[in-house]
Length: 376
Ligand code: XIL
Image 1: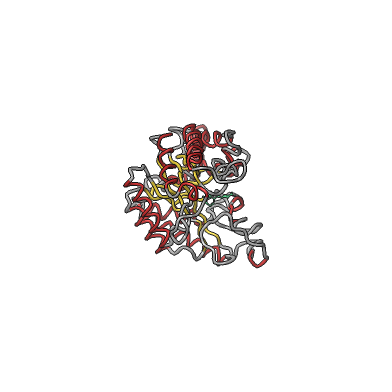
Image 2: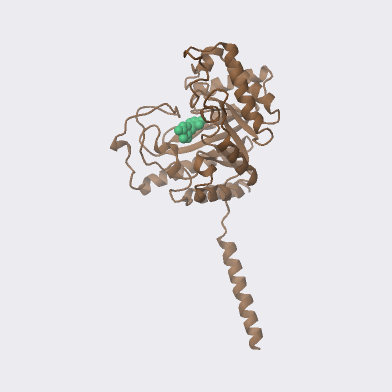
């Protein structure tokens, strides 16, 4: 009898343990969005080289896609002509494969974080169109070719259009005209015919930029260029962009027949120095205490407003889940976000889904619920 009682007690305890364990296991972001769209994050060097184990855990647990925040940019990959450094990029791709994550490469042709030699000769003069074409081809072949079949999609051209819809007068544009865009896509396609190829830009909710991007994509398509997606970076503030204008762009982009993705989402709660919108990385305003009001902590009212804004956008993404293939946030936790240093250095911002201790903010639960509701 005693033995039976003991047996029952042990069985009962095990059952309780099992039930409480399974109750504690929360649905993760990637589970909630599994049948909607990929949910991604950008990875920084410390995550890629394995130093930041706490946020690596969050990546493995919560996300289904990754993109490198910096380590595939041209200044890192080819700092000197003909000298390639793939060390961190290799580790990044390996991490993605090992953890079964959709891997996007970022970015092939961009005027920023571009090594000084790329568009000029030894005297600093612009190179000829022929030489620039050759350099673009060599760079793209080397990078895309190295990860052929492993990196599934590439941000081929980044930020070619200004907010008003005019062409950005980058060196690429100066030397090759708008044709540099077509060439970049062509080279990327030659290097990996299976890879998805994207155009990526910020402030995509602005009507001028929206129209120009649609026009550019249409033209590329008419020229027979393979383009698979349009990336809306999604670096936001509390008042830009409006959900309505963002929605118009999702529709307009999707009407071109390509996939739409939100590629670099973050929402800054900090005051804007000047009227700037978007994400021009070259901006750098002088620090001022007034521009850094939440250095200690975030007041509840602001946290709630931020939460509502995130929820509004995710509701929008879910509404267009058939058109959107991926939503990626630009980093894991608030401490690592570039927004702490852009467009003013040394501030304390709260733009991401996980707090400075890698704990999910309440918004994560809300987004997960929204995704589950959207199933019905
Ligand atoms: C940013 C990174 O987050 C920073 O670490 C870096 O110093 C500058 O670039 N648009 C892009 C991204 O396409 O590559 C930029 O990333 C942010 C704006």
